[in-house]
Length: 321
Ligand code: FAD
Image (cartoon, rainbow, N blue to C red; front, side, top):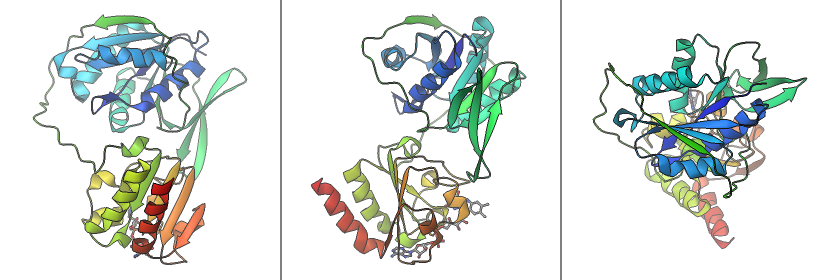
């Protein structure tokens, strides 16, 4: 067990990602002191401190620099390494997001530390923290223990319960001004690719379409259901390869990993590479006209039928609730 745990609070689309709160809850399990420091990188990010305290942070370090306004690996790495050198944390947790997956290994390598990636569970067993992570595309889980050195891990969204928000909590804020230099990338433009405002990897409900949607327009009934449910729309690689939707929606082994409470697979056969990205969803509903489709073997509820007939009925029923 450690004393001094740090978490990188991730900002996306001008808001804190919920997985940052989950990482704070995970870090709490790793400290004997129960004190967790959240690190915010960027410009004018003070407005996020209140939420971090509400979700369990005891201290927030703000690293301010214009080059931290958007994610640049070299700039973020330099800022974090300076903070780590000054603060000497016992451990640092990141979100298992595109950013965290890119940044955490850079930090771990610079510190010659190990890294446990994609953690879905943390447990205290005989005074040691056991980290659980999926392997073989989610078909098995392995348990890891850190014997020595700094604790470094990335936390998969939607798996570790965040603390209840407590608006009465507050904490200490420290602002630092890292020295950032000699990096070689310039961000000219950021183009966001999503079909709805709900972030796919953090969504509680995902409505995903496969080659069975047959066209770009075939995604409309999925989007309608998603709008009613407040869900995100995702896709199989089959649908992306057929140019029915953007690759940013792809779920699976070579796409995004999602763990929603409810996953509705529409016209998706259930190939192993797709299942790798969604099999840990809490409830899986499959709509497929082929009763032999492999997706039914992992579904909690299966509807054998034409998605273009089933979805409008489902959407209408959901509207009534
Ligand atoms: P299909 O397999 O063609 O299935 C379409 C389904 O729609 C069928 O089951 C059919 O019965 C059903 N259907 C058709 N019409 C209707 C209708 N009107 N109503 C209801 N059902 C209907 N795939 C991923 O998804 N994600 C990945 O990350 C991924 N990574 C890969 C990595 C590698 C290295 C490789 C080799 C493959 C990868 N794949 C990935 C591809 C994967 O193997 C499958 O080819 C892909 O998932 C199939 O997509 P699909 O289920 O949409 O299409």
